[in-house]
Length: 73
Image 1 (spheres, rainbow, N blue to C red):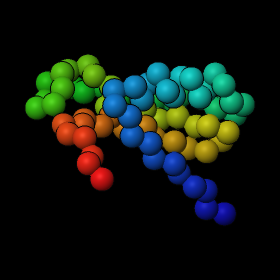
Image 2: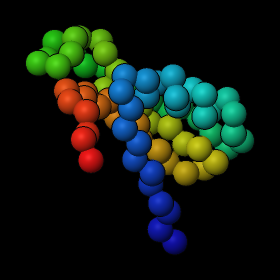
Image 3: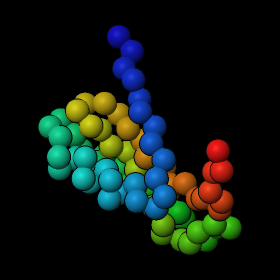
Image 4: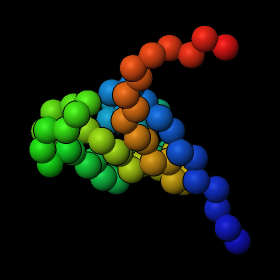
């Protein structure tokens, strides 16, 4: 049976959100945190880029999203 994967995008709060979910729901955990190895155009070395976590046993990768403009529609 194929399981769903829920991909979530965060504005710099992926690690905090993953920790919150892991503490709130059973069968949930933060499994990995990946940091930027160096500076890049929209960020700095060491910033969290992706977080791997599960919520209620469902895999949920969280990604850092850089917003340079707001949606207008």
